[in-house]
Length: 260
Length: 265
Image (cartoon, rainbow over all chains, first blue to last red; front, side, top):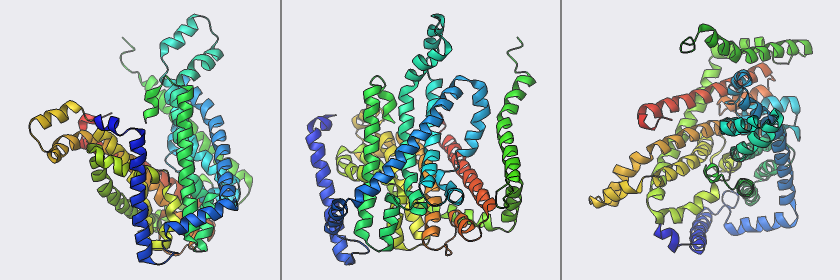
């Protein structure tokens, strides 16, 4: 407690800088000792690669392509999973029918679909979008079902008592009440599909961050490889932050749901 | 009165319902696949035949064992590093303040993204795959261990301190048992992530290193895709990947329940 007060926001930033400075120093020493820039480049060489890749916009081009695929997949997964999840959460019969299929497919990771999907869809945009949609689908579906199930029965009963039609109960009561867990589910979906994008692009796409990593690895340009790896981490982090902010903005009452 | 006892009908109906859609989908797959007229289209009957063949020849069990061996090795390395680190971070604010920036900086980087570096450093064999698994499994274990160590009732910590225990003794006798359920959750999540990562790593190694010999289930799938084009066998591998994922999760859940029955959820 006391340490949290003594080291406020400034203290945290200072600790961050200090730790990263030690890390960079250790990396630099190791790189000099290795003496092989293809194996382990110095931080300076990576920095140069970052500047070069950023100034000719190649970095942003690949990042934009991956981001666009990610958003498209996320939209697809949401459009498919949320209505199904709401329906499954409301109807025991539908849940009993669909849930076994979900439980059969869910353990098969999106990445395990890559060879089959590669054969059917070929190398291109469709493959990463399919894999990412698949990867995001299950967390969103399960989160929606859990959220809808968790809605206070009394709210639904109250609305019904007041004569609100069924359709509007779903739109005005169930979905808003399930929103916090839906947003958590969305975050899990993003995390899982962002992991899949690298694998999908590494193997079966002619562009994107995963592709760029592999391209520069074959050229043994390790500083460039590290630049794109860092970009993947940065974007994943920013995605998570953005979704947290979104949750805070739209469901400020649900602080607990954001903890996980 | 009659509602108190579940009648056979109310039991049989959900059971029938739960297999209805899977069976219907398999039938549709079989009919649509047969109607498509393409000899390469995987069909449930062909998949079953291919599965029997692959099990009988020992190829599938061998590939799964190779992959599992890598997963367990990487998982053990990750746990050996992450649990002590997580306990230290959760118990001592100074450790957390200095180490957390590093953990949080690397956590968003997916394990598969560092695969090219792993190949560069360790080649296309088992060590690179183990490194990927260890990297993937490390973060869920650390994060959950830290959370578990921090969630311990402060009264217990103060009571232990009042009784004159040293800080290390407190960690050993209060923090570790208290954080055990959270560590267990971290291990279970990490195992799922590790299994996904090994399939990805072996697939990518197969794709980028020309399929050559390092083995494992992901590699096997890639060979069926790229060299012999046997979609039925790819589907067998996918099902095997799913079944192993399920079995690993169930096994860890059972182990947790057995090791810490008080934390059953």
